[in-house]
Length: 228
Ligand code: SAH
Image (tube, rainbow, N blue to C red; front, side, top):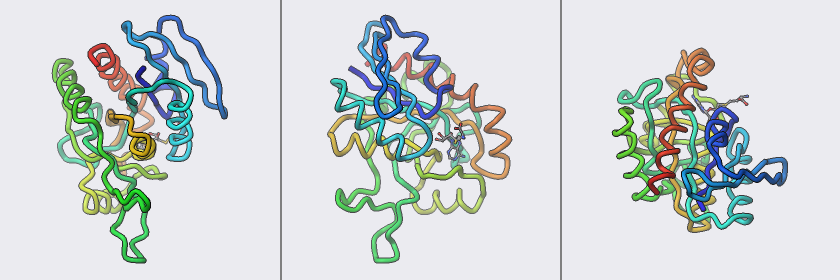
């Protein structure tokens, strides 16, 4: 079974509408809907905004369903000159840009305990996502996606994240889902369509483009499930 997580309704509703024989169950306030998508067993959920809700959702999903891979779909702000609004960021790996114990000598972003900064995505899922995006005519970049509990909206913050981690896009959940996948040894991939420039224009861009961008990510994920 493939698990699919989005932070917001706009990131999941389009996929939920494609499900055959949907069955729902609510745990800790998050609704999980399982069913068949293009003949493949899936479970999907809207986790809510930020790293804590995303972790609650990913871990609960794995404990409650026989999940063999997790896809996080949604929108993000671009950190890269190579991808703009409506383009697609595919994560090769994820970082948590707000995890910072550097004051006591650790490198920025270090997840103490597991001693990892860059949480990997499964190469097979990454290359399949790239292949399908190309077939759909989507412009993509693959690289590090940076997650943190903040909506990135200044050049300074963009630069900080790019310099520290080489990030191509900023969002608020992927790095947390990837950490849950890492400790449970479940493969994952994070796919985000760009909704904004993560800079001065981002609040306006986001309200104008988020819904359309979320649909593009859904289109890609739907085909990814079909071909997995
Ligand atoms: N109160 C709003 C909050 C949305 S936050 C709501 O509930 O709808 C923005 C969402 O889009 C997050 O899930 C995040 O992952 C993503 N996102 C898009 N652009 C972003 C940016 N510039 N910085 C951080 N996250 C961004």
